[in-house]
Amino acid sequence: MTETEKSQDSIYGATSSVLQQLGNTLDSSSTKGILASLRNSVGRELNASSEVWPLLFESINPDYLSKNGIPTAQETAMFAALQLYGIGQQGRSQSVFARGADYRLGKALGTFRKSLDDSQSFDRRFNQLVTSNSIQELLNHLRHLIKIASGPSNSQWKMDYASLAEDLFYFQVANSNQVVFRWGQSYYWQPAKQNK
Image (cartoon, rainbow, N blue to C red; front, side, top):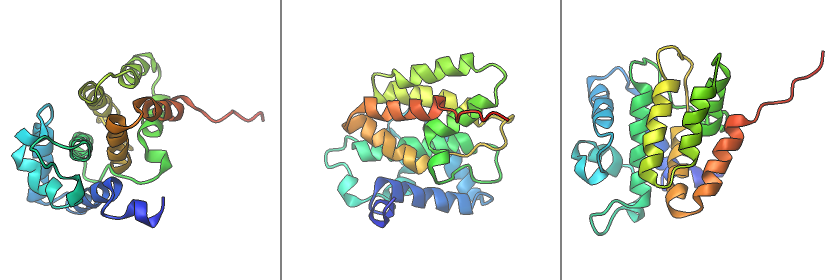
């Protein structure tokens, strides 16, 4: 990732900045309140979730802000990624945000999948995710998957929620098939087993 892509002006950079800030202050009562607000905003539109506006709007590039009162694709993507972080972070003392290819959505869910004795049920949920027809349907499936993968039995859960914000943006404005195809590759691909 180039310095320009990492800048605070990018979706990745702005989301990463907020996540770093939250991760550095997890034990504070204000951060706990913010995370609770993010979880409580799940299922609501951004324009009906005023309690999280300061968190989002202090960091976002002004070019990404709505001009007509309807949330932009950038605002929607960042808001959803922060909500999902709030879900994944619940009950944890260490941040579940990590950067890098091993923590992008498909790979993170695929790593969890490998830990399951029987992954069929989880695979079905993942397949529902990648066949979603709208951002709302996609987010609904994502919430369920992240709740399962970040549950109490998986203390190692970490994900790059900033790259997820980018993916959610591109799902809305570009080719959604390319986004979910990359997720599928990372989810199902396993390195070849070496013969001993």
